[in-house]
Length: 218
Image (cartoon, rainbow, N blue to C red; front, side, top):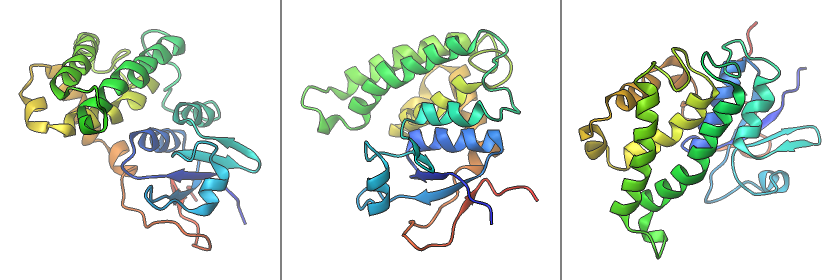
C-alpha cells in the first residue's frame, strides 16, 4: 500500500489554497486532512509547530510555512514551470511574494478584520493595499501574468490573497479601474486549477479513510 505525505489544510485559508495549488501543479499526491480551525485536531496540534495550516508531514519531516511547502513539491516536480518564469528569475518571483506576504497581507488583515486591530482604519488600510495592487496592475498590463504571458509561482502564491481582498467588498473592487487585475483574478477564479483545489472536504478525524489529493493517476 502506498503511503503519501500528509497535508493538513483548511479549504478557505489562502495559505492552504496556495499549497494545494502547488501540489495540483506538481502532480504529487498527498493525504489531505481538512482541519477545523476553531476545533483543531490533536494530531495536527502535535505536528504543526505553529498550529497553523497548511502543514506538511512526511515521516519526521515537517514544514508549516506555505511558501516552503510550495517550493518543496515544485522542486521535485514542476511540469508547468512555475519555478522558471517566462520573464525574470525565481528570485524575482520570491521578491513579489515577499511584498504580498509582508505589506499587502498586513494591510489586507487590517482592512478585512479592522475591528480586531485597535489602530486600524478600514479605508486607510484598503488604500494602502490598493497602492500595491496598482503596482501589480502595471506589471499585468505588460502580459497576462505577473512575470510574462504564462503563470508562475508568483501568480499562484499571490492570487489567493488578492481574491480575499476582492471578496472583502466585491462591489467596490469591481468598480475600480484596475482592469488587468480584474482579468487576472477572473481567469484564476474560473480556472480548472482553482476549481480543482476548492472542493468541500469533510473535517478530518483520526481513523478516517485517507483522502488523496490530487487523486494519483493510474
